[in-house]
Length: 239
Ligand code: FPP
Image (cartoon, rainbow, N blue to C red; front, top):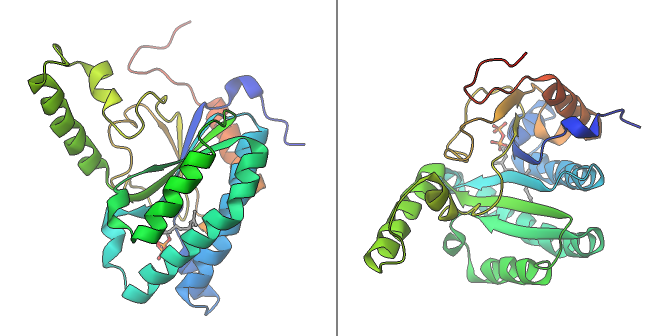
């Protein structure tokens, strides 16, 4: 169907889903319409990731900085998120998807926090795909929080030596592997405070396509290009 070399697929894909607003603007639609169609892209990418047996997918859905958007857009985005979770839970259960939130869950209204907990709880034993949704997420805050919890653990005598392995465990992504591939839609060439520690050696793929138009064929193109990248992790090329 897509002729991808399975040996060259990433283990962890991270995506900055950008361009919903511009997609809507081009069509003279309210911004929220872009987000609504964007949810369809989310569904398609999740299903495809699962079918390709890629075990980790992390989607940037709402940054810590996004709270300053117009109140009405934030309200509707949160509403959409609640609807998404209600609607997708059966699919997650059917497809073996473990849902996980990374970010500051406490920033959300209590009813939504309860929903996060419910979906995380009910999918906790699923093993086929970990779906991380980054919500009220900030990479710098994540690193700072890790430092604070590390200091507490040191004070309690739980940790003697701080190294990268120990530090990494204090991040939201804990024991998960770092992303191999970052996809960013709508042409912007920046990290936007996403997974700063984890993306030290991540391959970056940027496409001009707006998120609502990013579907299976676009995803395959990104994965195919990833398969052609030569990853050296700071070493010289081996013959
Ligand atoms: C970026 O587009 C997108 C977001 C800030 C939100 C991403 C949300 C979704 C894809 C839908 C909700 C997700 C779930 C999982 C329910 P933008 O608004 O920054 O677009 P612009 O840069 O063109 O203005």
